[in-house]
Image 1 (tube, rainbow, N blue to C red):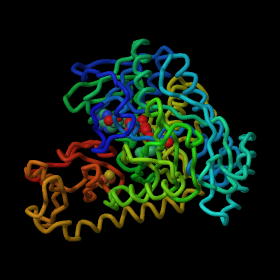
Image 2: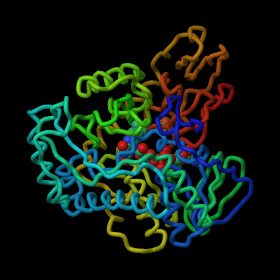
Image 3: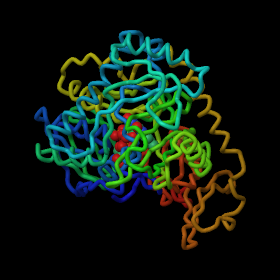
Length: 509
Ligand SMILES: Cc1cc2nc3c(=O)[nH]c(=O)nc-3n(C[C@H](O)[C@H](O)[C@H](O)COP(=O)(O)OP(=O)(O)OC[C@H]3O[C@@H](n4cnc5c(N)ncnc54)[C@H](O)[C@@H]3O)c2cc1C
Ligand code: FES
């Protein structure tokens, strides 16, 4: 598939056949307009069509072309925060609902794949959570007790994960996790949505969303979709200027996929408890080999540009623990939105009309959060009660999340100092072909990229969301905003919200 979320290529992009869709060329009406065709938008559209709703999905790229193409697709009820921490933040009942909702999401994906006959390599398997060293055993014991309290009673402590060359030491086994190919799954969902009368338009950039009756979604080429409800599933909401972006923080995370002989690594999901943590799974490559997919090395978006060093550290970490690995076949990165209390924000857009809904704050667990959004938002739109509604309400404030909220927002505030620092290079003449950098020009800054042919492309370096200065990402060849994670390609086109508009041309500033 064409790659529209960065320059690197994930394993899924090479195998999935994503059906091409037309762009929207006329004004239309639907019961529900879903903006964003990633796992969250497509799951919501699918479940709504099953309830008989007419649905239109709009995306400015391809189906699944956002972060869903860049995931590692562990399907898990083990979140980034531990359950004993989630109990402190969300209370004992809240933590039970978290476990229950993620378990339901895995079951739902399995059921949809079966009912719709989607060949997406879905598999059930165990997950192993292990400490980085023996001194962290307390954490494992504490988590075992919390897992049982929240209803995951089949979680057990084992002496080590079932790996031949890597002694993880005592760890937790979480049965009944899952994995799949996310793009094959979305291709299947697209067909199922269309079979039920849903319409999907790609290459259609949404510029304005207005709640009310009817709600209006306006595209950059001037078409309007009117709808009884709008679901904003753009990963980072484009319908919300500030509120949500103070409650979550964007992080880049890195992945390598290495060739391994079949059956040389026991098939399971593996996570350590470091921060940032490593996450590991297998995927079939051909009749003799698998790939071992290893992720980690996260950093705050736009605040480092050292992907090669991060990929190298991932490779060393992997070779030390999985000596049977062979060459690296894929390296890619993507962005996750870490919420300040460990779970996604799913529900009514704060301060908006009743009929605009959002899903964001995936916290690295977006496959299940996106599926939870499909179930929960369908219930909210249909006016049905859902026991998860309060837990995931985007307007919530949880005391336990306050320290993250403060430190992340202090970090954002400090990024505005970039207005007064020198540029990355003092002259665009110093940019070699294929490289970019921010250059100071008088009181402002310019994002300059010299393409492979030597042609210079300049844009304003001022992010169109809330005016931070973007940074060059040399691995993905994107301009990344260090404040709330908007990202732009070398043509200045926005590829990640919350920004709606691309970088301005230099003449306009
Ligand atoms: C490296 C990596 C590994 C991960 N591993 C896991 C994992 O193992 N398990 C897990 O559960 N999660 C994982 N995640 C997280 C998960 O991949 C994401 O949370 C999830 O894919 C997000 O889905 P989404 O539908 O919210 O967003 P996206 O897939 O990004 O979809 C949003 C869509 O909105 C569109 N859009 C944006 N703005 C506009 C606009 N103005 N107009 C029209 N369309 C617009 C975009 O084109 C995009 O297609 C990982 C993420 C990364 C990056
Ligand atoms: S993403 Fe908010 S200022 Fe750039």
